[in-house]
Image (tube, rainbow, N blue to C red; front, side):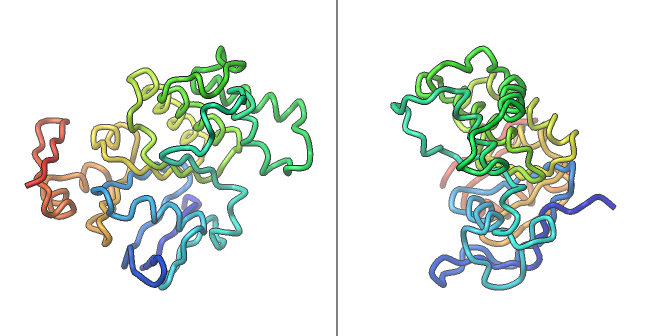
Length: 251
């Protein structure tokens, strides 16, 4: 049986005592990619933060690599929707990626030759080796997202958490992100991706979790991303599926 990187057992998550997610069940195994799909405000980002140990689980349990989320962070990499790096800050692309090594080296030790080699390989994997010396803030939004994924890859995670990684990225960056995620999966990493894009969920993921404060389905993508389950998940929003395209409108 494949190792389980992330296990969620009837979990409820709350902010200041106010439940955001309830009765969530599922798991992400090593070498598996799972899509979190649901409308804005459904709790997708909250679930990712709970897996990082940043928000409390008030009932049930979430375990990461058999440990409490806070105890497993060294083996977990996270790419947020928007990074806090100031685009005006004079930091190079290579330096941003090298930050991914700090959990291995510690903040007080300078990264060595091996760390720089790992960071360079990660940058090459997302197709930006030629921009290593560029200032991070001069890159396009899609390129910055690729650099942040390279930083996560350099961490050599066993679990990778991605929060809307494809939002606003160009086709070239989208393809580079998909290739890099696929390579991590083949190396045995577990990947959890929050996304609104059902086509990309089909392309990148084995399994889907439909989420809107409660779980509406968890299983193989083809069995879960169906019109009936999507309409149940999105509720008052109207979904129209045309081939591999999804149109979401509000009444």
